[in-house]
Amino acid sequence: MTYSAILIDAMKERQGIPSDNQAAQRIGIPRGHLSNIRAGRRHLTPNQIVTVAELAEIDPGIALLRRYQETIEDLETRHHLEKIEEEIQEVRAVS
Image (cartoon, rainbow, N blue to C red; front, side, top):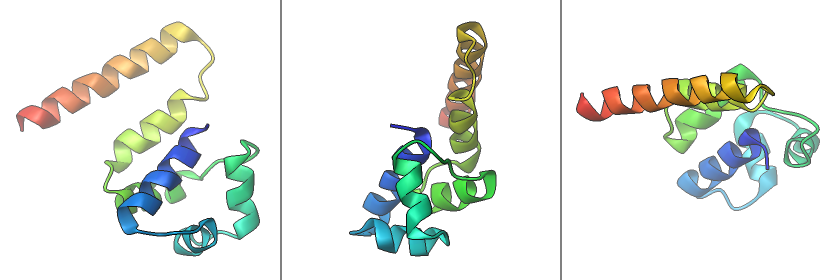
Protein backbone atom coordinates (compact mmCIF):
# COMPACT_ATOMS: atom_id res chain seq x y z
CA MET A 1 0.00 0.00 0.00
CA THR A 2 1.37 3.43 -0.90
CA TYR A 3 1.74 6.25 1.59
CA SER A 4 -0.91 8.23 -0.31
CA ALA A 5 -3.43 5.44 0.34
CA ILE A 6 -2.36 5.14 3.99
CA LEU A 7 -2.80 8.88 4.43
CA ILE A 8 -6.27 8.81 2.87
CA ASP A 9 -7.28 5.99 5.23
CA ALA A 10 -5.99 8.01 8.20
CA MET A 11 -8.03 11.00 7.05
CA LYS A 12 -11.15 8.86 6.63
CA GLU A 13 -10.77 7.41 10.10
CA ARG A 14 -10.04 10.75 11.79
CA GLN A 15 -12.88 12.57 10.01
CA GLY A 16 -15.39 9.69 10.20
CA ILE A 17 -15.67 9.49 6.42
CA PRO A 18 -17.30 6.15 5.56
CA SER A 19 -16.65 5.88 1.83
CA ASP A 20 -13.95 6.51 -0.75
CA ASN A 21 -16.47 8.52 -2.73
CA GLN A 22 -16.90 10.97 0.15
CA ALA A 23 -13.14 10.99 0.73
CA ALA A 24 -12.52 11.91 -2.90
CA GLN A 25 -15.03 14.74 -2.62
CA ARG A 26 -13.35 16.01 0.55
CA ILE A 27 -9.93 15.98 -1.14
CA GLY A 28 -11.34 17.51 -4.32
CA ILE A 29 -10.40 14.72 -6.70
CA PRO A 30 -12.48 12.48 -8.96
CA ARG A 31 -13.41 9.10 -7.47
CA GLY A 32 -11.42 7.43 -10.26
CA HIS A 33 -8.26 9.17 -9.11
CA LEU A 34 -8.74 7.76 -5.64
CA SER A 35 -9.15 4.29 -7.13
CA ASN A 36 -5.90 4.78 -9.02
CA ILE A 37 -4.19 5.91 -5.80
CA ARG A 38 -5.37 2.74 -4.07
CA ALA A 39 -4.07 0.66 -7.00
CA GLY A 40 -0.68 2.40 -6.87
CA ARG A 41 -1.04 3.95 -10.32
CA ARG A 42 -1.30 7.48 -8.98
CA HIS A 43 -0.24 9.44 -5.90
CA LEU A 44 -1.50 12.50 -4.10
CA THR A 45 0.14 15.74 -5.21
CA PRO A 46 2.14 17.69 -2.62
CA ASN A 47 -0.78 20.13 -2.16
CA GLN A 48 -3.19 17.25 -1.70
CA ILE A 49 -0.83 15.61 0.80
CA VAL A 50 -0.86 18.78 2.90
CA THR A 51 -4.67 18.96 2.79
CA VAL A 52 -5.18 15.29 3.63
CA ALA A 53 -2.52 15.35 6.36
CA GLU A 54 -4.19 18.31 8.03
CA LEU A 55 -7.56 16.53 7.92
CA ALA A 56 -5.89 13.42 9.37
CA GLU A 57 -4.19 15.57 12.02
CA ILE A 58 -0.77 14.44 10.83
CA ASP A 59 2.07 16.90 10.46
CA PRO A 60 2.07 17.93 6.76
CA GLY A 61 5.88 18.14 6.68
CA ILE A 62 6.23 14.58 7.93
CA ALA A 63 3.58 13.43 5.45
CA LEU A 64 5.47 15.05 2.58
CA LEU A 65 8.72 13.47 3.76
CA ARG A 66 7.15 10.01 4.01
CA ARG A 67 5.69 10.30 0.53
CA TYR A 68 9.06 11.36 -0.85
CA GLN A 69 10.81 8.49 0.96
CA GLU A 70 8.87 5.90 -0.97
CA THR A 71 10.17 7.31 -4.27
CA ILE A 72 13.80 6.72 -3.27
CA GLU A 73 15.23 3.39 -4.37
CA ASP A 74 18.65 3.75 -2.76
CA LEU A 75 18.47 2.22 0.73
CA GLU A 76 21.23 4.42 2.13
CA THR A 77 19.38 7.56 1.06
CA ARG A 78 16.14 6.21 2.53
CA HIS A 79 17.96 5.55 5.78
CA HIS A 80 19.17 9.16 5.90
CA LEU A 81 15.63 10.42 5.36
CA GLU A 82 14.34 8.14 8.11
CA LYS A 83 16.97 9.56 10.47
CA ILE A 84 15.87 13.09 9.59
CA GLU A 85 12.26 12.17 10.35
CA GLU A 86 13.27 10.63 13.70
CA GLU A 87 15.22 13.75 14.63
CA ILE A 88 12.26 15.97 13.76
CA GLN A 89 9.96 13.82 15.88
CA GLU A 90 12.40 13.95 18.82
CA VAL A 91 12.66 17.74 18.64
CA ARG A 92 8.88 18.07 18.55
CA ALA A 93 8.48 15.73 21.52
CA VAL A 94 10.78 17.93 23.59
CA SER A 95 9.11 21.19 22.53
